[in-house]
Image (cartoon, rainbow, N blue to C red; front, side):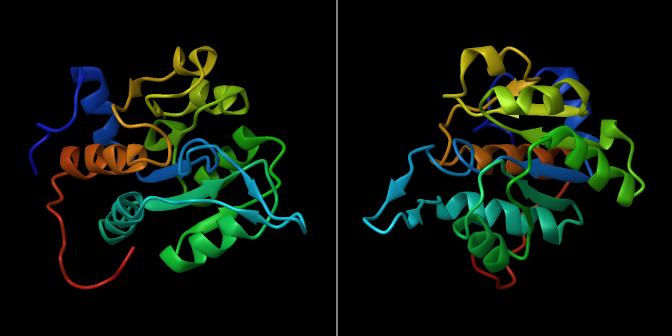
Length: 181
């Protein structure tokens, strides 16, 4: 798969991406645009990009484990994760501890783990994982710790760029046999 639609791919980023076996994603600001919609009853709504979902499905098909890790509670991320067949962890106060736990459970060293996030609670994970990815609109205090930054914004295809990077560096062409995002 060509990498021509991706940018700023240093040899270091390519080598890091080629090792990844577990990809963890923050939800708000990464898989969504970060805005929270609350109705008069306090029920939350979020918008997800279908291309991000397709990328996550392709990662799973390629044998890369995928997890959503969010500090917020709520059922929206759980519903999206269920739809995609992805593990979802909500209300997580210490994202790094959860990332370590997932990696250890899979027998993976941290160099084989990627984390994509956009704000300060993601920085501890960025400092330890093999590949830290930030969407284009990540907060600057967080983005400075990323190994790579997408062109697209959170909730607008940024996660798909990350998925494409992992798939391409590991030699996986898109698989077109069914499954929806």
